[in-house]
Image (cartoon, rainbow, N blue to C red):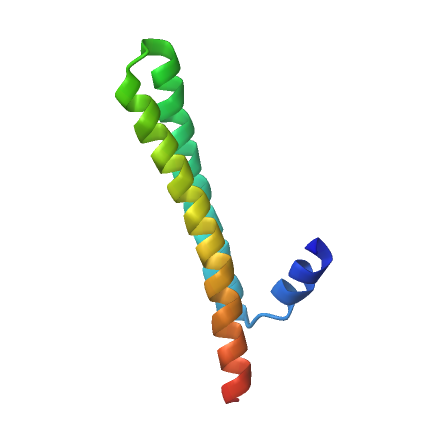
Length: 82
């Protein structure tokens, strides 16, 4: 499965690769933000911070998966058109 994803990623157009890389960096930054929020929750025990941190973490995972799915879809459409 991972080998298939790596082969698919290497076959992407350069612009799609660039967008996916920036998307992963953005998702990673949002994930780091969520970890910081959860660390603040751990230090201060404010229940709202837990739910905010957890929601932001799920959002970062959603962004990462969406960048992968959209990149595969755009690459497939682009190859079918040309």
